[in-house]
Image (cartoon, rainbow, N blue to C red; front, top):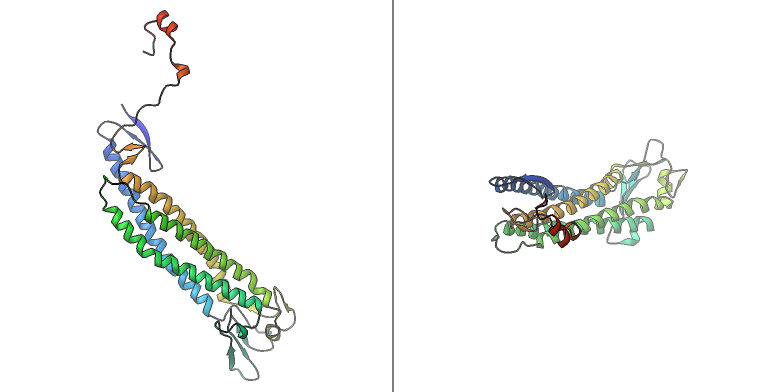
Length: 274
């Protein structure tokens, strides 16, 4: 007799002499998948942190073009402008908000800095996460599975969502500062809020927009890994289908309405269903 059961999101048919083998094969295959995806998630999260820092420090969010009256470019807090000579003079520091030319630039710089802070916390949490995964893989199967590393992954997903939101706010708020007199002096006619005039969007701004989607995907992947690892943790400790691994689950209970009454049994003592 074969029984169809649900294991780790897949329908598996098992019976005498075949359930253990099928379960072992599915368990180890999914375990390898989760571990590989976790490593890739960690690598791309580090890449996102590097992108965040580059976007923050590089003053290439908006800059000159062939039609601007002078050369120069603006970042989140630093800006460089030229004059009669091709040499550029740079100003602006993040630790001195008064040196940042626009309130919109200050707000954008703050949100990007906060985004960096969130992703740095995620990177710090990676160390206890992988340590707990290593320990849980070697835990005695008689002990209940640990959920500490799953909770850490959920926290990482929330932090990455906050990081993506902060970068989104920075990209939306930044153009509100293009009406500043310094920006208008570089971008000439037409430079106002959300209108860059003769200037062009530079690569750091584009990288920041790409980073929003990157962080959102990493957050979704963190929640996916948390869900998968919870199923993997319970499967690894023999808690499959609500009971120990290697046992066939009990048949479904017959509803009382389908059970024969005493009168029916007296009238027909040998029914087909008995």
